[in-house]
Image (cartoon, rainbow, N blue to C red; front, side):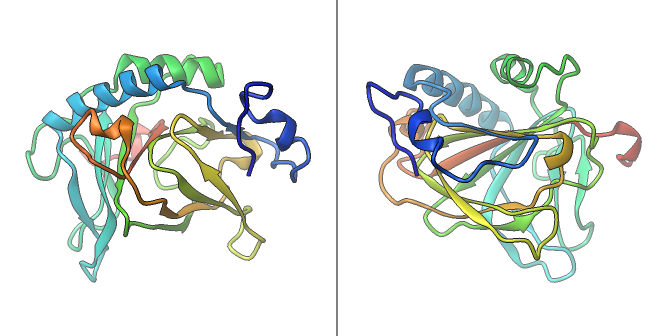
Length: 229
């Protein structure tokens, strides 16, 4: 994977020699510099004060997910043994509405995608050294005409990128803090996942009380008519 130098701060020279990405898939290494990362981390720290990370569980079995999660926006993604996968307007532990999506993230969405209609869900995933996220599509009740924007903060992560079916070959990207991936159009339902993170301290996340780990922020737009009242 490309790394950045003073002569090539975004790693673009090295990336030219790598396999091209599918139409609609965008990888933006080093998009957020360290001050921007710290500012965004502080925003998320304030969100988590009102909507703390919680343990999600698989439908039917109740097996815990290795990634702890929270949400911001009008809707949040939740899963448990009794109710299964769903979107809802309140935190399952506090029963309070999710905090608003930070303005910094809303501006970033428009800057990247040119989509003036804002996201109404920000999924906050926290990965410790043992956390993984299997290959999946962002489907559910999402508005499929809207893109998905994913922002990395903290430790490096091995991101797995597949195709439009599980049988297609996969490739891996090493995501660093400040990297952004976003996809839409013909890549909106592309399979993707996270194999794990690199261990060690995180300067960015230490600012909000996490000595190490990775936070991933996923911005999506949910179709309100598909969310139970």
